[in-house]
Image 1: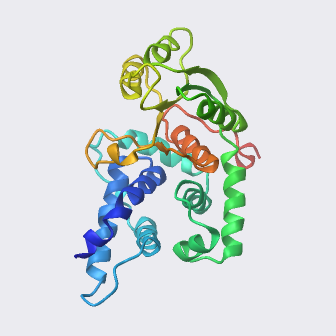
Image 2: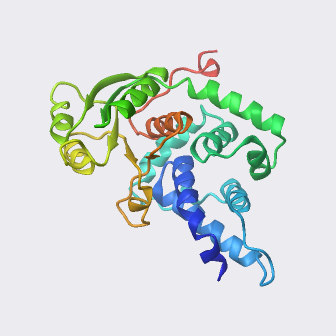
Length: 270
């Protein structure tokens, strides 16, 4: 078994992390590709296969040393990346990395310390900084497309705890599209399979035909969407989900939306 085959199961999650960190599927995948090249070149024939921790550690070394996401002015995503980088100045990179590793990828403190090359105490400090900085985001209206009442209630609780407002909970494709008639949301949380047998993907397509809005998909089968082919959703919530992971994904989706803004930070108002 070659090295790439041995780490194949980790690659979709590394790609997810990379997209969330860079705000672009193309940029994230470029970093992942550079990471895999470095791992393959640095692993000898008799060496053990890279682990999930060593793969993420290698990725962060690449991310911190190679400006992959700054090339190619012809790429239509560049305008979005320029806006994103201006927002990154308001959220310190290391706390955001720590937040994503913990809340999105499920790394514990000790694992994060190994991946980031920090002490557990430093990791805890970075997580505290991340929580404070992420709280600076402005609130928005959220449309939830979910047919299971318990899950819908959980999502409502998470959304409101972040300071956002729930525009409506839609159980079907028709309800979701009709909800756009009176007010357009700033974020959509969309399940895939809905109550009447309709498809959340189709509902989202209709919504995006009317307006541009960040979308977070909810699914028990992420591998069906994380195929490596375009178009591919950037933001996914995997069922059963963890509250912290949902908070992380919602925050990232809004952070990388070109229309989203940040509240004034102390440094900006000083």
